[in-house]
Amino acid sequence: GQCRAVCPTGAISINTNIEVIWEALADKNVKVIAQIAPAVRVAVGDAFGLARGENVMGKIVNVMHRMGFDEVYDTAYGADLTVMEESKELLERLTSGEKLPLFTSCCPAWVSYCESHYPELVDHISTCRSPMQMFGAVMQEYYKEPKKNGGKQILSVAVMPCTAKKAEILRGESKTDGKQDVDYVLTTTELITMIKKTGIRFENLDIESSDMPFGIGSGAGIIFGNTGGVTEAVLRRLTDGHNRSDMDRIRHSGVRGEEGIKELTFPYKDREIRAAVVSGLGNADELIKRIKSGEAEYDFVEVMACHRGCVMGGGQPVQAGPRTRAARAKGLYDTDINTQIKKSNENPLTVTLYNTLLKGKEHKLLHRNME
Ligand code: SF4
Image 1 (cartoon, protein in one colour):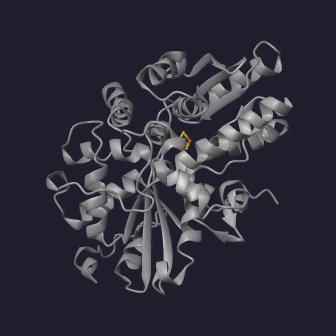
Image 2 (cartoon, protein in one colour):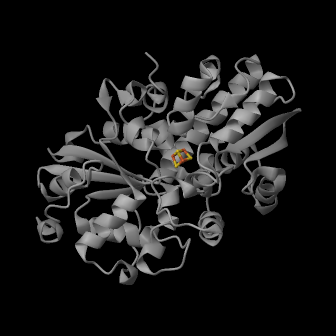
């Protein structure tokens, strides 16, 4: 195909899947579907001389189409599904009073750390799949239809800021009916390598919108890439209002900022939700110690293994000083400001999906398969 001209030869590295993805892109019998995590879009531009932290999602979509990806979707949409399910789970646990605090499950490095260091807390981890895995399962279900797959094999690729995501896709609980939902994870750095191999002047590319029907994520889904983003998104979901003052109240609740441990309380109906936001596993240890000693009590705890969250993930370009770190976080918050839909439950695509493809399959496709 068209991509042959830009395919590298001999650019094989044992730890990456770059070569097998180039092959799939050149194969007319394979439909290659990609999803792009929020944090990726604010870490690619500076590799091509663009401003640090600039959201270059539009250029990423364009270059990936040119590379031969058939559809390029937004993981922020998967994050919206996560917000829906995780908020529901939190309310159920608040009602029953069981397995509190609820720990988030989006970060696979945290999930495996908890399994090995705190097996007694594993029950507290949300049963939700991560945004990447929710999206992967929904996507596979969607492309089952011959009309949608056009008789081609589907290859699902996730572009992630994270090396731990490469292990997450292999876990038994990440599979649906025994089949892996995401075939390969490419890190941001690997995507940059692939773009450079094409010889395309990325910095000069026009922007393109991500593909439908999974191309719109709410602002809440976008901020998942920053520490505190999941909590902020859940609080938005649990808040009835949706105007600027409602959003500002949540934003100033203590959920933002790059501190390793943040604590906040947020009014919900006739009670308060007590939340903690942690980034860095050392900070998670410290918080768990406080919880165990009874010194602190929470309803909801967000844990991201990387300091500052996924914008500083191990799959992102590593040379990132304080200005780059701040610019990436700002890049995501600015994107949220520019997004009309702030709340996951107001994303029309989410609403449609629950009434169609997801009907009766929420548990199967959106929750971890624990058997
Ligand atoms: Fe991956 Fe780090 Fe994000 Fe966890 S916090 S999902 S390890 S990038």
